[in-house]
Image (cartoon, rainbow, N blue to C red; front, top):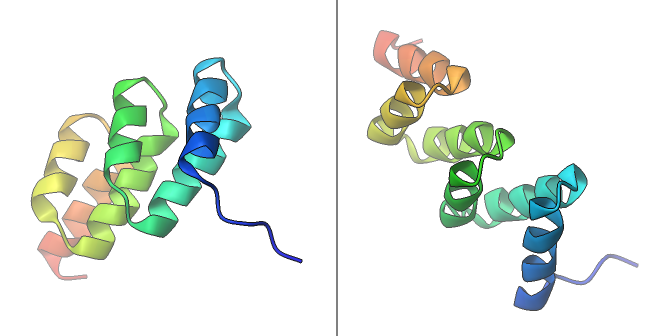
Length: 92
């Protein structure tokens, strides 16, 4: 039997736990956001200092082929975004 989808209250609880330093809650919330294609959640998490969200935003930008977002992420210090941008620009 699978896990039922999370409701908004569940996401709020995950945000709260992540803010308390529970990295696994932040990981779960970020994974759910990426699976849903939600850029807003990882952006919020990035602004709150959750480093992994930079990697997740990079994955979403790659999927969307969003070179401007990759550039912005690379300027913010996300190495994966710079690598992806370089790859797009070189055609490899």
